[in-house]
Length: 112
Image 1 (cartoon, one colour):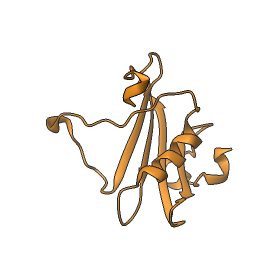
Image 2 (image 1 turned 30 degrees about the vertical axis):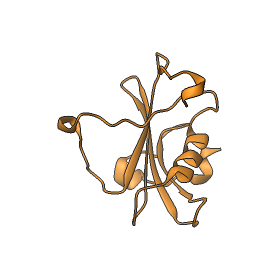
Image 3 (image 1 turned 120 degrees about the horizontal axis):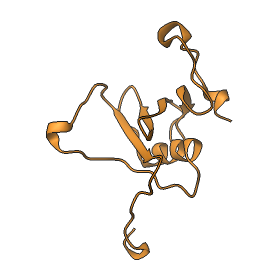
């Protein structure tokens, strides 16, 4: 399903990824502008970064990407790490993470 969105980046990265990893471009559900996506699965984490040229992605855009790259029953998180660990390599980029070997704790239903 993701292959229809896959970008050919062999000249840059030497490969195009695999079943879920790689570079992708999808249209925003808000304004049809491009969302650029990098997906990786290493170090015990599934990671998806989402960016736009002119602004960070919004909730609807992140949710569309979440539904494409993660199962409905999986919990995925965005992290706000301590400032000393914060790295901003690319402006207008947000990230989603999921540990591969342990569940993410979530608050009680009435809180979310």
